[in-house]
Image 1 (cartoon, rainbow, N blue to C red):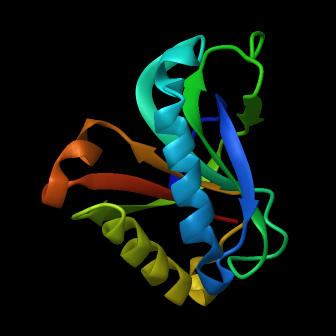
Image 2: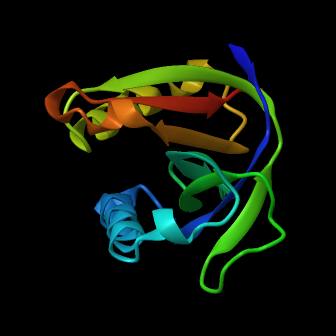
Image 3: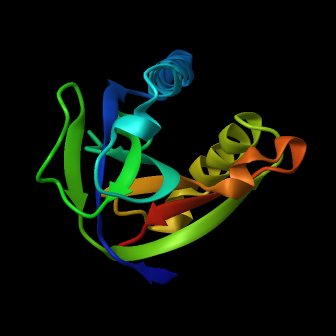
Length: 151
């Protein structure tokens, strides 16, 4: 377990759930929107170009509804462009997992493993997130860090 610092993010969001493949469709559409609207160029006050995918506002646990936010870490929420959202997330205790392989399959497989361990992980369900840095663009050798909030 590792203490993570809080951060601010600007991006786009959708509400979804993991039931009946809803999340795969909704999150896939969110990625499509992020790329097609060239949001990497439109988000102000970027700290870096690492895309973060945040899962928050959990209704209950991984079986309930939640909000998915796709965006960039920023230094300020003073200027949030129209059509985007800004949120601040506090720091906390996190356990990291590494998704390795072709995306998005590696992400899906890693999350299935996390859900299988749900009873023993002692998750807090405040927010969890993935970081898509330069390692996420390596085809079959891609790597994405997944951080799970712990109690």
